[in-house]
Structures are given as structure tokens and as C-alpha cells.
Image (cartoon, rainbow, N blue to C red; front, side, top):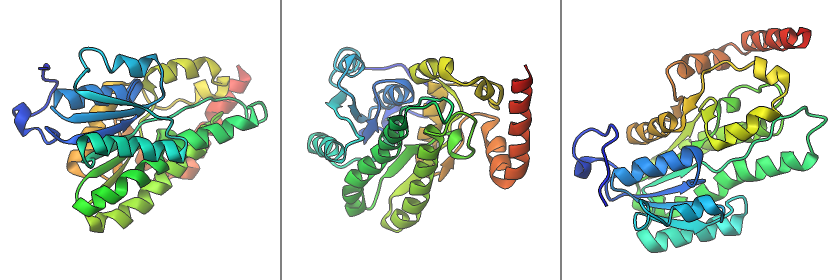
Amino acid sequence: MRHQSHGYDGSRELDPFFAQHAIVTGGSSGIGLALVRLLVEAGARVTVLALDDADLVALTAPPYDGAVLAVPTDVAWRDEAFAGVARAEAAHGPADLVVTCAGVVRPGYFTELDPAEHEREMQVNYFGTLWTLRAAAPAMMARRRGAMMAISSFAGLVGPFGYTAYSPSKFAVRGLCECLRAELKPHGVHVGCVFPPDTDTPMLAAEVPLKPTEAQASSMLPVLSAEQVARAVLRGARRRTARVHPGRRTPAYARAVTALPGVTGLVMDRDVARSARH
């Protein structure tokens, strides 16, 4: 199966992901699917761990059949995540790249969200990342090479209005990556954390109608395409970047919210107050 080039430098054979084994969680939709497309075009062997639904089934049909191993997996549960990674390694060998894209979000007012939603988002967003990386780490460490890229969110840098279930789970992913980066680097394994702003995916389409008005008013960054984020992820893996901020404006905003949290809070409070007045 041959594919059109999408911006990779050099020949397909020279691409750093050619013949590499990549595991992508949540790879049947959104950012994960964009990653799968780019990796297949680069000549990688790709395993997708995702929920058993029509999106996953689509990866067993052209143009992906034969290039993608689709493994029905709910990574929120430890046994399933470990089994999914084990099946991927049995088929293609230890992973050279792991990207954890599986995630869920449901914005809403804190006192109106179902308490179970907080548990669900932590289970999928944080534990889904944790179990996948824990399952893949031993083989990477034994080979002393590989990269793990975890998708956090810009909401893993600052707590936006209406995201009391989502944002803490993404802060947890950020903390996990910072610990793992220090621990796995001496073993030759790179760990990077990705902080995308709103991204044009089916998840965002389902999320927007549920946003409180105040959350709509406090959006700070333009919406990116899934491919823009996917390219940033792969660039970060190639360059072994610890913190990846996709988009032109995102790095500056990320520096601002981490260096000047008080100012960021004032700006967000102003936007929320304006929304309330209107």
C-alpha cells in the first residue's frame, strides 16, 4: 500500500518512523486517527487500542487494512490495557513509540455534573494513560530506546471554567509525565507531554453544546486541526521534546499561564464577569 507524502522530509525509507512499531490509544478518531494516518504514510507498523465500535472497525478496511492492527481495548481498565499492549507486542514486537490519545470530556457546572463523571474522566484520561505507559515501559527500558507521548491538554496547564472533571485529569497526566521523564530518561526512553488547545475533532463537536456560557467566553486560543496536533506530536517524539505546545500561539500562552498564574486568573475572571453581565 502506497501513500501520498504529507510533509515528511526525505524519502519514505529515511523517515524516522519507517518500520517502527507505534501504539496509539484512542487511534480510531480525532487526534489519534490523524496520528495513525501520518504514521501509516511514514511506513510504520501501527497498533490501535480503542473501544470496539464502528470507528475501530473502519481501521480494518482500506486503506488501513494490513497496515493497522486494531485491538478492541478500553484502556481505562488495567487488565484490558495490559492485554492490549501485550497483543500489540506479540504482533509487532516492543513499541518504538506510544501515544496515549484516548480521552473523554463533559463540561458543566460543578454542582450540576453527575458525580460519576468525575470518576469516568479520571479513569479514562489519567488511568488510561497510566496503564498503557506502565504496560509498554518494561520492553522499552530493556531495549533502552523509544518514546512515550501523552496527550494532556491546555486545560492541564490552567483550570478553565466548567471543566472540574476534565482539567484535573489532564493535570494528573502532566504530573505523571514529569515524573516518568526523569525516571525513564536514564534508560534511554523519552517521555513527552502534549498540551493542545481546542482541536477540531468529534469530541470537541460533542463538547461545545455542553459548555457553560462562561466557558465559551474564556476560550483563549484558536481551534487547531487534528492533523496540526498530530504533526506536533510526531515532531516532539523525533526531537525528544518534553513539553509540546501545538500551534503558533500556544507556546506563548503556555509560558504566560505557568509564569503568571495571577494575571491569568484575573483575565479569566474578567471574561467570566463579562459573560455574566450579558
